[in-house]
Amino acid sequence: MTVSVPADVLSRLKAVLGEGGWSQDPERLAPKLLEWRDRWVGTTPFLALPNTTADVAAVVGICFESGTPITPQGGNTGLVGGQIPQGEILLSTERMRAIREVEPFDDLLVAEAGVTLAAVHEAAAAVRRRFPLGLASEGTATVGGVVSTNAGGTQVLRYGTTRNLVLGLEAVMPNGEVWNGLKHLRKDNTGYDLKQLFIGAEGTLGVVTAASLKLYPVLASRAVAILGVASPRTAIELLARGKDEAGGAVEAFELMGRLGVEFALRNIAGTRDPLAQPHPWYVLAEFTAGEPGTAEAAMERFLAAGLEDGQIADAVIAQTQAQAQAFWSVRENQSPAQKPEGATWKHDISVPVSRVADFLDQAAAAMHAFAPGARISAFGHVGDGNIHYDVLRPDGGDDAAHSARREEGSRIVHDIAAALGGSISAEHGLGSMKTAEALRYKSPVEVAALRAIRHSLDPKRIMNPRVLF
Ligand SMILES: Cc1cc2nc3c(=O)[nH]c(=O)nc-3n(C[C@H](O)[C@H](O)[C@H](O)COP(=O)(O)OP(=O)(O)OC[C@H]3O[C@@H](n4cnc5c(N)ncnc54)[C@H](O)[C@@H]3O)c2cc1C
Image (cartoon, rainbow, N blue to C red; front, side, top):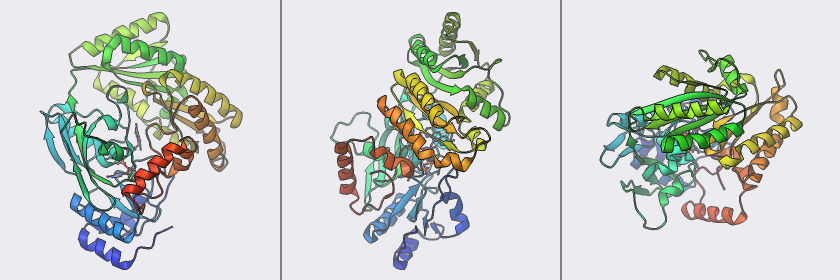
């Protein structure tokens, strides 16, 4: 459905944005209307390409007055369809790419919404700092997108989600007013924390235009290893052991099933089997430290103890940067490697770390009963209790038949996670995909409070109206 936008509103938007600041060219729009997994195709009457916060404020102000809905978009790497407009005006931050400030004494960097995560990493490295948020999509995902989805990634175990990495925000409110909250403060107990409402709001409370991001010292030592283990339960025991051995130095602890590794070997050119023999499960562990040699020594102690006790069947420590990258590439390609394998029911669940193995056991039993022959590829940030639990159609099976059962199958997986005290969206958000489903698991008290907050800021519900409650 395309919202019909009155001609005078379009004329006003074109006038404030100026030449190069908007487009209605179908070829220019096409890549922004297709989601990465080809699951959502959108429509829009108008693409706004603001260059500055003032431009964003002007666009949102006109839309508020006229009741015209808007979908904000950053890098279009979101996995739940929130950035794909279904008739709304599309506001892209692609031209807002300035790093406004880098302040090593405050350990802080201020970046505009359209700056990619990879560009933030580069700017931090230039002053011998780092921004510890790592996503396989970091070359394209933007500051506005990671803030608005509260992105997680591979380093949450140590540094937390985006929520823990933002010191301040600048945003345009749904009525077009600019809120400048770009603070440099580590401590600020002055009432409700507005930036935390924007983080994870998926574009429903306004447009994030810039963020102050926390920087950390660069690392002096890093050890990456891949381990073969018999079961997720053993992986969880090893995580506890790794924390003991390495103190605060466990940077990442990722789990992959054998099937996902086989998909990578089959479908991603250049992938090599990480260990000499196949194993039912793999852990990718990364330890880091500020002092030279410390992470490597902790990793060696950890592996030696695990091998001796039989918890680890086999393990290899990366000897070079290239080898570490090759191990990470097997993990990061778990999702892309599924694409040629056909229709998939994707899930992004979290449970308490202590319940991960229970979740995997219960979900496997339920899926084998519900969809005999379906192939299960489970992988994820096991150190955070976050599993990407993907159920692929049987080998040689019918895509349409598998897709037709998605809703019912996903309901079973979500109910198991919820019964274990978990969440149906650990890090991707709800978007268009999971908003209705999430209502089943939220209490009416919480939903009423969330709706009241949204209505008070956006009484006309112009901001990403399809998304959230
Ligand atoms: C290969 C791959 C790997 C991934 N790995 C991870 C992972 O490990 N962890 C993880 O958390 N995610 C992961 N993702 C998902 C995705 O990269 C993140 O959700 C990312 O934060 C989205 O950023 P983006 O700039 O692409 O946002 P978009 O996709 O453009 O938008 C995402 C949402 O944010 C809103 N939005 C975007 N910009 C703004 C803004 N300036 N103001 C207000 N709202 C805005 C949109 O309306 C939409 O609702 C992965 C995706 C891919 C393709």
